[in-house]
Amino acid sequence: MNRNWNRREFLAANLSLASAAALDVFSTPIYGAVDADSKPAILGGEAIKYDAGPAWPFFAGDEVERLTEVFESRQWNRGGESSPTVVFENDFAELLGSKYGLAVSSGTTALQTALSALDFGPGDEAIVTPYTYVASVNCILESYALPVFADVDLETFQLDASRAEERINENTQALLPVHIGGAPVDMDAFLELGKKRDLPIVEDACQAVMGEWKGKKLGTLGTLGCFSMQISKNLCGGEGGVVLTDDEFLAYKVLDAHTHGFLPHSGASLESYRPVRASNYRMTGFQGAILSAQLPHIAGQADTRNENALYLSSLLREIPGVYPQRIYDGGRSAWHLYMFRIVEEEFGLSRDELIQALQAEGVPCYAGYQSCDWTGYVRRSLDTRAGRRVYSKERLDEWEEATSLPNFHRLTKEAVWFFQYQLLAPKENMDAIADAVRRIRKRAPEIKKALS
Ligand SMILES: Cc1ncc(COP(=O)(O)O)c(C=O)c1O
Image (cartoon, rainbow, N blue to C red):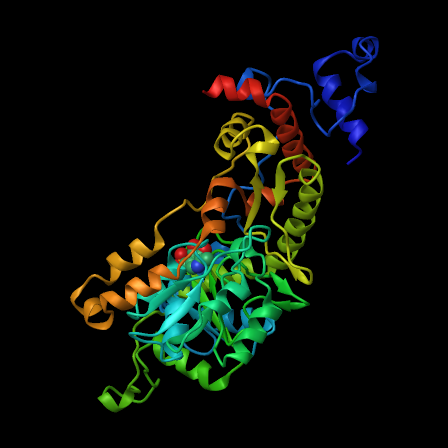
């Protein structure tokens, strides 16, 4: 989009061209759709012209037909070989480049299934980021295991591999890096760490469908990769999840763990069930049908998001006090979230003030994960009869004392999030966001005063 033309279009809609020329407004600096000197909406100015992207979830078009087929087939459950769920899990694994894929009921159960396949249990520890959705922690607690938090890197928002290494001890049984926002952790560092300390890596790729590390898809590099297809996700089935692995033995173990170790067609005696720690985490045929309809569209959408996000970062990076999430070299984000930090001393407004001002412009944005007392949360979760049996007060005191998360707490005060569908809007909307942030910064003292 030609920025000069944008500006002319905008002015033509608001002034006659003759009066615009008379005011010599074309010679002032231009920033996409609005003038950096114009009044922000929060101070009573006109809101920017902004399209927040398509309604989400989007419709691929053939969902109703596929759902009707499942309905009429009466095969509403997971089904056999050619069922939509089994076809979906195979197609998903193939698209991402993994040998085995298993569809499950959610991202949370994908993580639980993966940990269960690793015989993860009471007293074990897994290293995880504090900057994540609570499911990354609860999947560990569900096994009466201990989540061990290591701090994040402030620039990339990701679990820092060297800090993760510092927290490894004889109880550590897994590394659980989360590709937060859909952007990769430093996978080279985690793969090396896993190898060096002989630890399996469970990638929480719940936000990272189609994200990449050096040409390989996220969720296919570790021992097991877990995905979520919950309503907000880039590939969405309402609810749903997938576990990927290249390891045949683990593929059987996840299959068993998600369906009581049931051997199909082997009768109803107890011999039909392999004795494994298992549950029912099966995906239904309806979820499989919707996901099969959506799957062909995710590669194109991932490209659009990536193009828009990189462009938006190039604009925002130029504004003092604005720090877009850095993507590690060799990585490509799935852009489930577009995240940046606001440093108040440089920007002139706090993160929360900027959010109010951006929302007044009609730009959906969000503060994201809040600062929290993770160790208190875990202590309360384990303060049960079984939890007290596994964890002594001394062990938890020691674990808590070693937990230090200054970057996490800072990030929760500085981060701003946009949602993935905003990156599917036409490119000029990235200009519009940057315009809005620029004009808000220009009037920061006035805005601060107005909001105080
Ligand atoms: C990082 C992360 N891990 C795990 C999950 C859990 O996925 P689900 O909601 O499908 O159970 C989510 C979903 O929001 C997530 O964002």
